[in-house]
Image (cartoon, rainbow, N blue to C red; front, side, top):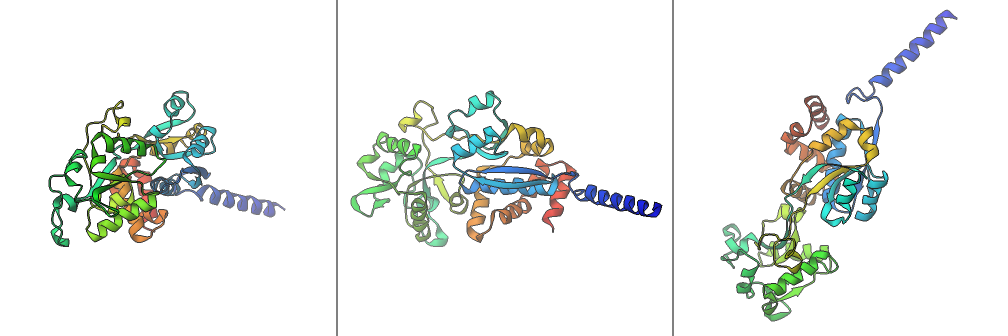
Length: 333
């Protein structure tokens, strides 16, 4: 009986040892679930994948995405159904600043703040492209107002008396701004404002023109895979003014794209939250990753791994030495 008791104790001890060591790589004995907001666009999915990979490698975090519109996922953050929101476009949420002040969730920092939107043209339109045999078509084009001089370059295929500006998508708030801009600069005298109908149609028009080396002027925004892959130039405009912007008289503002967590998750995973505080990228880095997805038909997880290998210095910026080692070990497997 004594021997049997000793055997049971030994077995229990071994079981406990393996249980304690099961997560020794991360230093955490209990896995923590983290629900990431997937608000419907690829850049937030990419950042979710990067944070989730690091969480799994170094903090014993089990990440999963929950899809939904911006209002649904934002309300989920407030209610605690969403734990982590890697891309909060704050200007699109009227109550955001009041909600932060009211303590409805925790704002940890800014993911990126150099995003742009406005009227873009391919660089070869201005500078040419000797490798493709393209001569400059609008060498003095710098600003939106300069478009008045170049309607003959950006011809409307359905109206040979005017040029064509591919505008924003009907129903988007910025479409009203772009239409006001079109009238403010007198471009309506020289151009037709064309509604592409959808994001996919707009992207298709830009890529088709670019691949053929043809001129096009179109509304777009950053970061997207398009700005990461194609060499596009944002036409300059007057400095941003909050009162004049809705009238189309200034450039579009850059937004602070923040990282937020629910109050419950803030308390539940403090070390992972510390990492998220330090997480910072840029529109250029994000667009580069999105272009990689497009070019390689890569999954978000594959892209996250590629990105962390490609920009290894970010690991040291975001993580303490011991956690950085765990992430690099995971990447090498």
